[in-house]
Length: 287
Image (cartoon, rainbow, N blue to C red; front, side, top):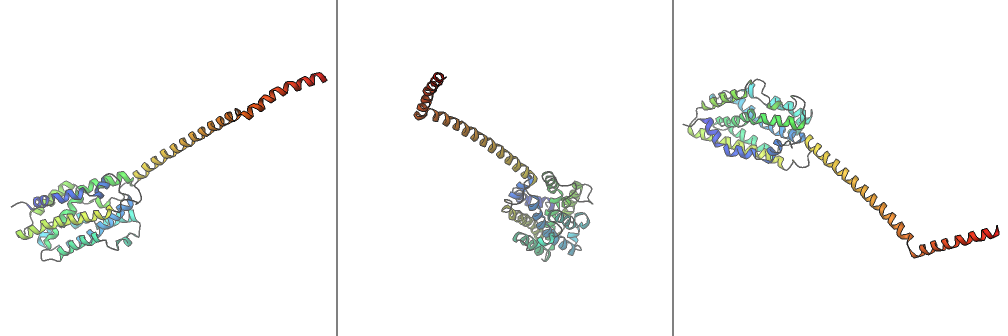
């Protein structure tokens, strides 16, 4: 029989890739998710982990779930609360309502497992969430710090597992525990299907932010880029203004020259030249 950890990985491979191709994740990896957007994303994560960790606690005596139950090492609720306050301020709990459609869909999926005849399906949600946080989540933390100039160890508590010394070793141990789960074949199939469901619900969470990414406060990177563009535009405007002034000045000079060459002006100039010598002769005779 195929190992459960392998079945879960193979069964969710396509959806895992789909989640990585979401607009939200692409923005995240490019450093273009603003602190405001990320703060809202943390709200969604909190809703999910709040329900998941309660469900795991409620079923901690289930022999199969006990194999992958590590509340002290894996619990994300408290770290999320720290990050939520950092990004959203002390009143962050006000953001927990109303629950969004994608949040509700994810919450319902977890609760359906917990309240079902086979709560062992929660193994799937634990697998998707915690192994993901211990793997790709570490990359996200670095991106978050790099592009938003976060103070050291601030805003990334969610990705820090204080009681796990080596993430890779812990993940390997977790997979071995998954392979020790003993359930009937039909329940095993349900666990794999539930893992797919978890990825689909996760993609829905990302999708809720796709329409919100535009128009939200910019990242520091975006601010600097926009500032550079603004400075360039200001310099170009100043250069254009100077060029226009020089052009206007040249036009005024040309207009003056043309005016002096007009027939009436030429005639007056000639009269002046003729009269002046005559006046000189009169003055000399009188003298």
